[in-house]
Length: 106
Figure 1 (cartoon, rainbow, N blue to C red):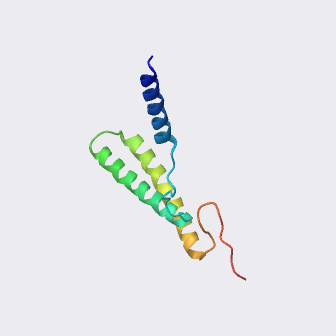
Figure 2: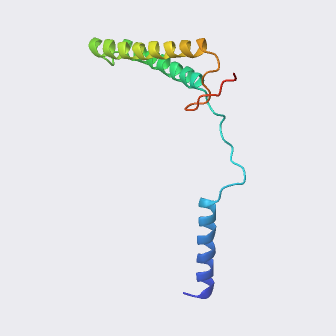
Figure 3: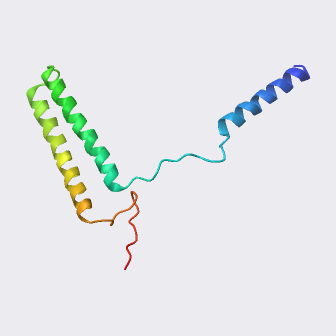
């Protein structure tokens, strides 16, 4: 190999390594979610799943027994989520971001 080709290969390799591993000075992070916000998102997903399940059953994609079993499972999950949301809303400010309880003032 000529020294010119070797130099070009090294520069290209250095550029690729820099591009792959470079972290900008500031990273844009999402705000921390509270447990209640997470549960509301999960509730919406379960409701969407119930709506999709109903549509697919009416389209003939599921037998009656499978439909009833999946529907019951999703409804139980939705009920548990709604109960936990209600419990969190009844206890004001006792839970902060996910995994970290907030300190209460005395």
